[in-house]
Length: 329
Ligand SMILES: [Zn+2]
Ligand SMILES: [Zn+2]
Image (tube, rainbow, N blue to C red):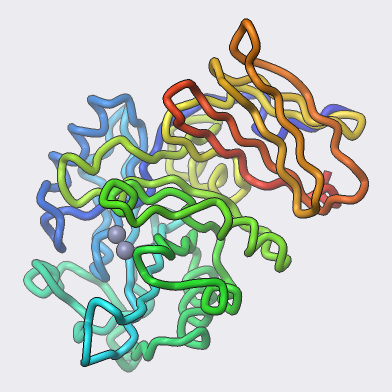
């Protein structure tokens, strides 16, 4: 039976899942962010200012959906050289627009313009301020709390954070990892899809994100996801995120993806190559000869637990599907 990996019905919506505004340390106001992204054909932006969870329902219109979120950082204390201290950044994006409380509030961690805007944040005043000593225990705990409170939890820019395999392999509770964070990549701190495979091979069923993490205008438009959802409503987009109905990209499009008779079928925008990656030493590629690649299929072998697709265009830009586990198909 044909199983659609990107839903057969619905619409594609371009989304940036990570950005900062003048409410914390960004240079653009929420309204300016909306205008820039709308002009570039985006329909969805998740507003993820540092620690201050401030929903932006006022930005919603027929063609634009703001998602409500915030980013936290868990910093290693290293007084000798602050630039050598490891850190872990996590975005929490609410999967329901009725969620209004920041569940791990502690004003001691605010910086930039965030202290000035702390009064706009709702939190449970009966709970003690949430302390965050750096380490996998704190990080996993925060990821689990976020998930339990109804947020989509993303592990951000491991390279910029100076985190490596020995760190992130111990984190549990994330929904997705950034394989491209454009604001980090454009200054040379470039993440890679290898981290995604490391986490998948360890048994984490998670998704891949490309984001801008925009703080200034030049950060806009380098990394995005394309969500396939029934409508541009908070609930439809949140459900698509939760179910992994999206792909990550810096340019190319994945137009269709389905699985039938142990075979993965795809359609994509014009590509120089399309590669097929698994958790084991089984991989394959379709490479352009006279014509660029726009469709094809790969056999999915019994020896793999998951597979994923990468589309590379003639500018070297890539689209990455999420990973699909054969047991779920
Ligand atoms: Zn960050
Ligand atoms: Zn950020």
